[in-house]
Image (cartoon, rainbow, N blue to C red; front, side, top):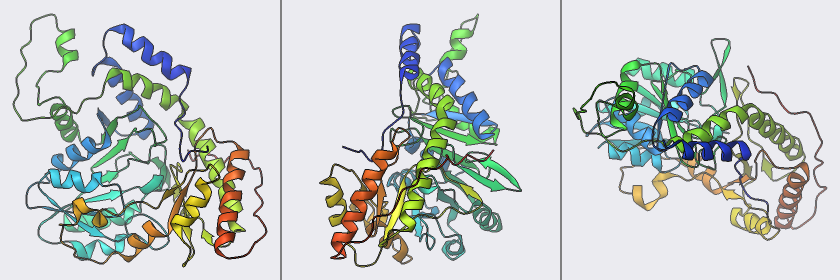
Length: 400
């Protein structure tokens, strides 16, 4: 079986977890602080705060930029349902706009029409690792006095060119960026999340809220030579990351350049093969973006049957996934008012498939995927076509 994704974990991560378990400090502690410092260095953000997962990161980010009951947050439906859930957990309402033509991210030209006196923030998503058009989004946000939260769940290691310099996603562009370390992501701690920001006041809120609103952390109390009594000035949450997870994350960060280089090499091989394959359109990468290729999405030609193609590949031992979900089409969010039609989002869900991509993937495995894709497409065209050649090339280097 060729899976859709596979985390790259090894002895370094296992030994780090083992050592942490034996240290006796397994909850949020020194390893979490070390992981935060390393992630801050990676992104160039002055502050990085680790939490239990990206959904809790989104919740805290929205609360910190004062999203509350009666507010509206402009976002995309074409994303994992956690985005709408986090907005609604704040008592606010998601307002969905469509995605861009030829891509899977928010169309910035549609944002202004969605702004009302109730609008508080924009929640943009760096979908499947591809950076959003942040300069365009920020211009609109500033013009309307809106906060910007970046859902960077899939985007650790992706980069964007800003002001003639390449910046890691998580570098402070919006107010807060939120990351996921789920096993489907490029960098994993099993579960886990991170918030990055340039604003010290927001970071202080995250750190207070993630630990029940407790005024003194366990590390501060442990290091103190005198007795300290904590208090609870605000209501908080239990959104902490464990030191076991953080120890794994530190090792994953050390691997990240290798992981990104390999994923970009594999994406480049997909690009080449798909140029010669009729019936599918490969994803586009703008010249100002450098994706980590967390997922590789191909758009199907009109009339092709997504489920039939996926089943034909599964029958040959190859896992795929359908296009990214749309929140407005899920029962849990159908009660939301529909202000705008979302034709591109709906087409993307139903006419896109995600192909297997992971750092350990061999060229032979990738060729099997391409052969199965080509045969599945040919079957739907009721004829055969020459199979696309897959050429070995040097890995595409990450921008620095």
